Length: 452
Image (cartoon, rainbow, N blue to C red; front, top):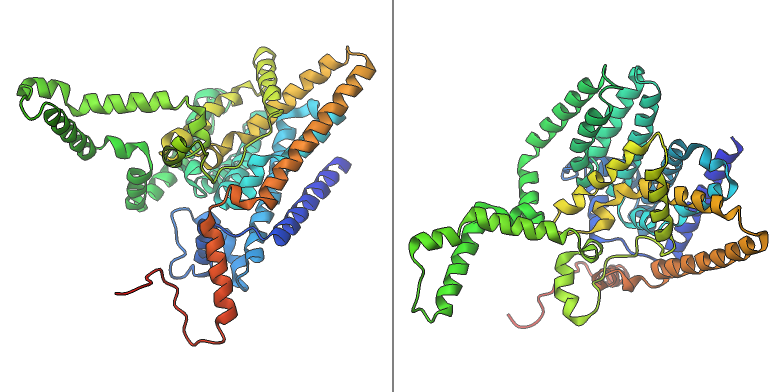
């Protein structure tokens, strides 16, 4: 109980500290954040959206005056809930490992200082809410493995999965995969309720998708790989390729019709594009940076803006060591690791492969592997002399503190290294209008300057 209170105090203090940093350094809202906040204020007219959970969550906070700081409060509160649910999930998964003081302290710190979680909490409310409901769903699933006949747990799992699905695109995609995962790997354990749970969830999601079919279809065709392999797009590209080949021969040679049908056909072109896309999945640099931005800036050697680091370099060896130990040792939750590639599917589905907002569901499992790796290091270190272990610990601690300082300096003091200048531009416009609004009856903001 004392540890739970301590964790609550640490997480609450950190959230307050975050709010003070935001207030002091005036980190502006992004366009998406502002749009979501204003939608919540006008829910009766245009507040309904494909994902209602973030909008309805914001309604109580949007009833007061509009300020950047007030708009940040609901995000930070959601962030506090995220830290707490993440901690509860780690307690369930790690179990006895957390009894070691160093691991307990490390887990509390890494949850608080994780760059990935901080980016979500600061700028991405839908993804933050999705991760909260996903963590709750995993916690409930673990409880069901302990008592599969408890109907309350199944009802809570259903509710958390629906809230998860109605929060963001990754939530909606994974909510279709999650019941299949449960059915395949736990059907013998959950024989009594698993089919009923799956049918209800799919029925509700099916009605939801039918109702919003046009919106989903338009978004899918514009923002995902499916847009590249539609029959119309394939036909247009085939025509362009034939024209280019004909012009390349100075319009003097054209292949026979049956040869052209064999070389230029939609199934082959669709296969070619799909194969290239599959190979590109292994380009981890493209996971970190949106492909469109990277295409524009790659020749200059300057990485595109908009992506903060998702982790610290010293987390990488812990992850690999934890994964190796987890796979080679007995663990009751080994099946859950299968979820990692499944949870990365949204990252592969979207044309803009931004791991921050499409692959965030793997964060709990990465944290678990980290503390599992740290546990292995602590077991090995018991054989070392105390002086060597102390020297190693102090060196590592100094290194960690320096990297954390650099990360926080980047987020709060060097905003334009990851935020585009248009946010600053809009902020300056708002300041100018606010200072001049009493001097004019009407102020028009436009980019149409000069003669007609």
